[in-house]
Length: 167
Image (cartoon, rainbow, N blue to C red; front, side):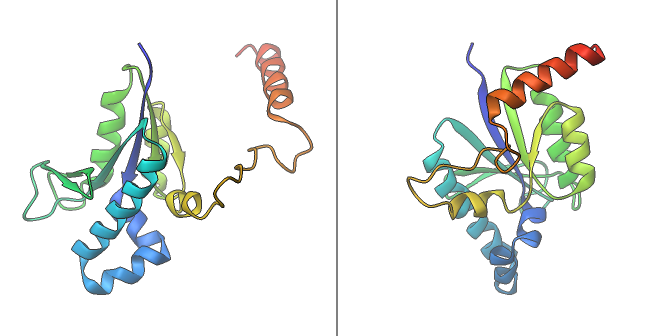
């Protein structure tokens, strides 16, 4: 069975950390949520194999873990106000063991560390914005760019170190 890719966004954390989204908060939370969903929707169009999910803290209208779609993106509202962090971690924990690859977008250390512990990879809150601004046709820089080695060499070094340390 092929691995399912999931991009999980810590909604209010991203809204409050990305200047383009934070500026919209003056218009209200709903406007900021809609803008985030729109940005995720555009990202999703360029990455159709990835299921995108945004988790928000509970909202009086949507509390109780209700799902809603904004700009075609699945949005989950936690059961309680300020419960979004635990909802993100629970989502990752529930996907652990399934054939899925979860990437969490958040700058919250509690969320990032707990999600890593459950097997998710993490990206900073500006991941969607920085990915959006990459020139079309341009290739993303290798993670090892500027270190003087290519990905293959880095992978070989990692394998040797794993053997050496018994990992």
